[in-house]
Length: 180
Image 1 (cartoon, helix red, strand yellow):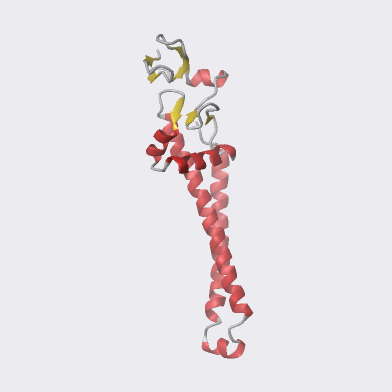
Image 2 (cartoon, rainbow, N blue to C red; image 1 turned 180 degrees about the vertical axis):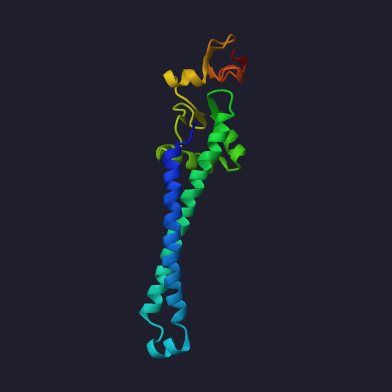
């Protein structure tokens, strides 16, 4: 599992509530703004600071709604990325492959993935220290041995992680290796 489901579900619920609240508040200010143009209101109060303040609050509410929806898109991307990661046969993926799978540009994917990892929405993966365009899905530790088998490449001697029962291409020499 690559999505921190607890954190993602709490965040999505919070985003929904905040979006509804900002929508209601923005709607009230929008009614105030539109109401200031009614003939009787315009004649009595004119178009003044209250009208412009209402318009400013509508814009602020719209901005907060937009920001909440952008965060929601990123969290939904975490679920899509998790599906891509779970279907990978070895423990590494190139960012351009992941970007193609989720229909994003590589720079957009890298930026969103970095945000998701740093904010703990995506877990059990990291950017490779030596090659920033490669994602390592699980560190070599006790947890990884349950998900990946560590195989030695017969051609070059490199150690690679492969899901049991699947094959992978050695990143060092390109030889295909099957895990048993």
